[in-house]
Length: 139
Image 1 (cartoon, one colour):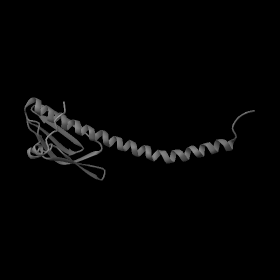
Image 2 (spheres, rainbow, N blue to C red; image 1 turned 30 degrees about the vertical axis):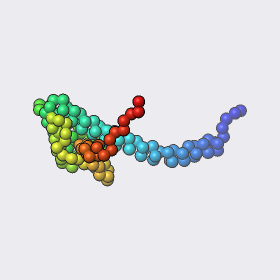
Image 3 (cartoon, rainbow, N blue to C red; image 1 turned 135 degrees about the vertical axis):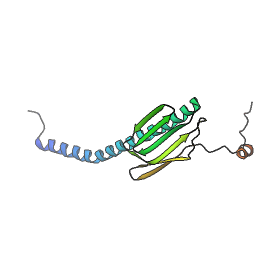
Image 4 (cartoon, rainbow, N blue to C red; image 1 turned 60 degrees about the horizontal axis):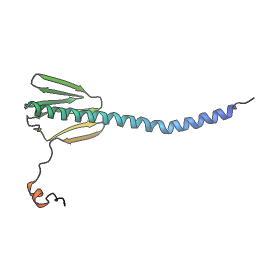
């Protein structure tokens, strides 16, 4: 008769329980981080969509932030998005018809950490381009 003894089965269960107790918390933490990243990426897509729609339509758009929601308004178009992990202080952003934000930054909280995103790119300095021109290709 072939099979496993009770002691062998208990040893295997003890080893698997030990491995699960080590791997489980790491897997849960990784899942939570991926959920924060997913919401951050959604926020960036909303910002980019708002900017591009304002540019395409040549009209300003407004984003309003309040707690876990973001509202978009441009003309008669309105959208609202809900977040479960990003917490916004009450703030409002406006993007003009050229695709530039009137405000310089957006801030929010994730758990106990504060985040701030710079909205418009830094202007290119003319002096920097003249001082360090782009090198010419050799033919």
